[in-house]
Length: 346
Length: 264
Image (cartoon, rainbow over all chains, first blue to last red; front, side, top):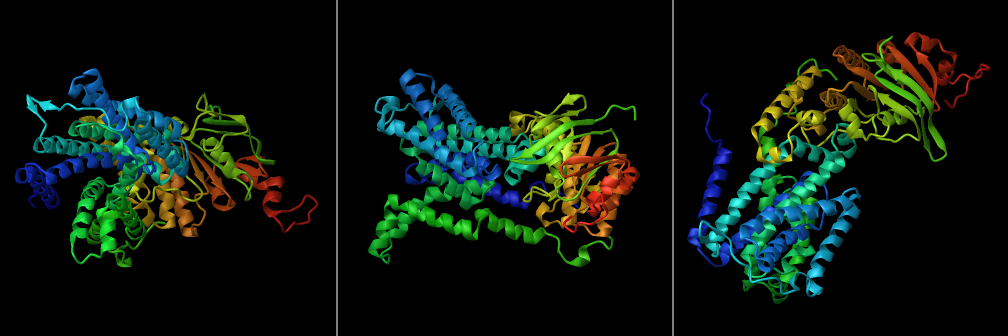
């Protein structure tokens, strides 16, 4: 039998990716592309957060803080100290990883609930320092104006160009996280999630692996933070609040915990959701009260909350779970007794 | 007999509040033997094994493995030294396949670091392929070859026990500790299990076997330590132990004066 070069399921994926990369040609600027850029940035953090939450089973609610460390590193270095943009871009993930290491060292040994509280506290402290402590990191209005990145003399100042930079990073991060998850380190993370005791007597350094997951995901949040910083005119505390940390949690939950494609899907959906809700609110048939809720961004948390409840109750494996279930039904051997060999040990 | 012991446990003691679960227990495990530790329920067998594999710090006492004092090492470090264990109730990685469960057991043999894993450098896939092959061989050895890609949670109780043994074997330990592997198995399964343990021993692994029930152990064990109320009451070959008056009392609940106590 002749082997196919590209398996059909990957072919679909490649086509989809190609189409996606053509998007800015149809919409060179404006709302669609800028949403797509944000989508890419959220996708990068979600992919990193998925390693911590989905793969390792650590429920951190402070990941937006590492995102912020990345963004602020870039802003402080370039605006206040005149550092070269790309150099600042390269330093940012390492600063975020360092922050991840410090938070991890203090909180990783805590139980689920306490770790969640500690990371929320960390996030609140870090963003509030910037909101209220005027003078430290440029107050609420932020640091700026931000410079732009350029590649070979080409300034990445349009949404069109920035789209390609961002999504190139998404593809790289997707590749890297998939490699990690499929390696022995990724398996060790999954083992820690499944059973810490058994993992430890199997030779897995539980605290070490958790820290590693934490630091890697903080690093990726730093990459996303740097990307966001060069996309915005000013870097302020608003994008890095606990609200985003919770949104990341929702993204990974509805996409599918422990599945990179799920994280991408979750990030994409939640980036588009506010727009979708606003469009729905525009329909004349929608009653006035509901329209108020749908069009006001501060009520969107209600929708996230409802989504989370629905998914955790009925689809704990997220959207990719639907596909996996269907896939498994297709490939799994029939559990009928006839399939068993006549003589079976134990 | 002149060979140096693989494991030396000296005066090992563990208190839980006011209760002394293990009381100054000392014993040796010689390389290549099947060393059984038996005793009635609550005798302190599991407490003892958890102190040997590092899950429970002892109140006092020493554990020397190879020529190394290991009492201060954590469970992962002891696994890297060459101690692997299974549990009374199998503790598998339920959402992972059988194959993955076994490869996690081989974690200590992987050399590639974070960066090479993330960038999928050439060494990573070679290492992975080698370990996968070994994991498959372990599954075949245990008769689980056709379950490699099934989720661990889909196995029967008996298969789960075997898979857990496979995971422990994959670390290629010098000492394999099995905590009541026969619990919950029927007699045919017990027979198969006893044969498997002998085959593992023949591969050169030393085995520490914890059992509640005397039957099968006496046929396959090379030497037996008997615990009762946290104390070592007998230590010797199976036949020596079986004739020991204190062992008979502990198991049958016969008092020294001959009156039986129904409680134990």
